[in-house]
Amino acid sequence: MRNTENKPTGWKKWLRKYRVVLLDEASFEERFSMVLSRFNVFLAVGTTAVVLILATILLVAYTPLREYIPGYASTYLRRSAISLDQESDSLMTQVAYQEAFIRRFQAVINNDLPADSLGAANVLPAGWSPKHLKPTDRELALRQSVAELEAKAKTVVDPDKDLLMPLVGTLIEGQRSARRNFGIKISGEEGAEVQSMKDGTVLAIEGTPSLGFTVLVQHQGGGLGRYGNLGKANRRVGDYVKQGDVLGNIGEAPEGEIPFVSIQYWLNGESLNLEKLLGL
Image 1: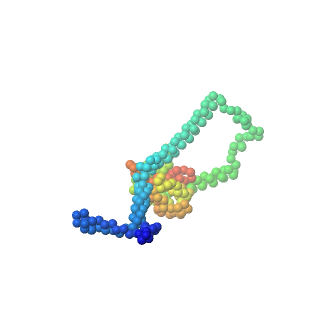
Image 2: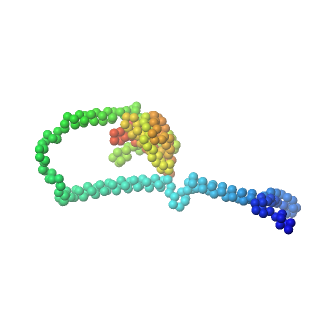
Image 3: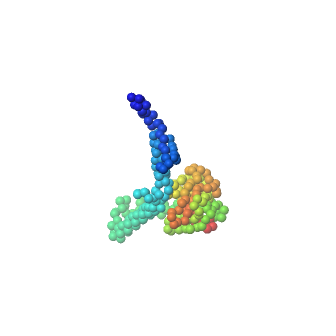
């Protein structure tokens, strides 16, 4: 009856102390001893398990080991897939345009065009005369004012003084408008600062940390600058930037490639040649 009353129960059983002793087998000399309880052992084992699980998750999530997970695509593969998807879309659009042109041309050759529902082309409306093709005085004044505005807008950009070199680096690819390449690429070190070529306002920031950011800046004088392949954007939409202010840093380049930044400058719907404007 006395043993039953002294036996710990419930929570006291977890807090009951036990001594772990290491003895020398030959001399029975005590080498090491430790006082433990069931709660201490459970706490130590649980903490160790949680730390190991968290360390494994962080190691896989923030290191290149995540690329070995089945179904996970690397950054280079995702960039290649997006580039190929855009290229295939442009090719499909071009093919559809060419097919429509060929069908229309064949219809003209075979005289299969449908009849004009508005009447024959050689029938002129009543009261029409060649003098109706002459522009009025208001049209001539409007054309002259538009021409003056376009000429004034084109003279805003000064190739020698107006634009600042956004990055100290080497030109690796020039502008080729015929190949739909409307900008230049300048190489630099990873993390190098990319500066604004001119005063302006940040219009938009597009992209993701894995694919890179693109910053669009509306410069003074009507010019629109596009700074692409940035690993980090230091500005927000609506920020006013001065010439020389840092917009971001060059991002990490895929394996086997050189870090670079792509820059475009548009004015009045026309892509200007930055090789000449920046003296490259």
